[in-house]
Amino acid sequence: HRCCAVVLGKILRKKQGIKIDNNLIHSILKVNGLAREDPRKKKRKRPWVRYERKHSLSAVHMDWYYHGEMKMWAIACLDDASRMILSLGEFKNATVENTIKVLDEAWNKFKHLRKIREVIVDHGPQFYPVKKNKKGEANHRFLEYCKTKGIKVIYCRYAHPQTNGKLEKFYHLYQRRRLEFDTLAEFINWYNCIRPHLSLNI
Image (cartoon, rainbow, N blue to C red):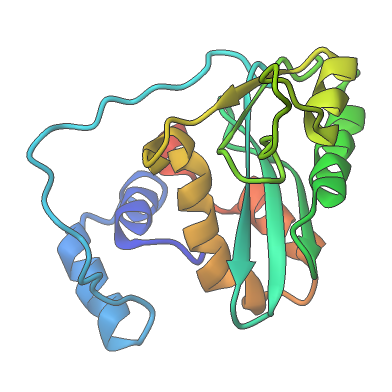
């Protein structure tokens, strides 16, 4: 399954009827080189407050990520409600054109179900106009594309990566697992259809 001890524990207990502690599973994974401790992990003082959309395609997340080993830029379009990767592209350069290409792929693939209503992005130059005129107006091809499709653009707060946290979590997995698959399509299929999702109650 290529998943963590918590997910494996749920699978073993619910599907196999095996009662086993998550810490024991984690220890076994570590011994076999399949898990490691995260030195950055700290205990939170406050509980997480989860937010998510009720309906698929009501909001999607987009952001760029650089995979150092592959020396490639990746951009994903992730559905907020289902956590499904609607489209994912790997490119040599993180450009506005490639951003539009990936969003357009998701739009065309799922428009027969429902049109994408909102897209949540950061203030990167691929999404946000850096230069504005004296009136405070600016043209940007990404914004123009979204306007033609009726997609509302929602920008994350500055210095607040949690707004796009679902995508940050996906890219953490992308960094660790992408090279285990020969093709991008195989990786997407594993993420969407095979890997159990804790947030979706397995």
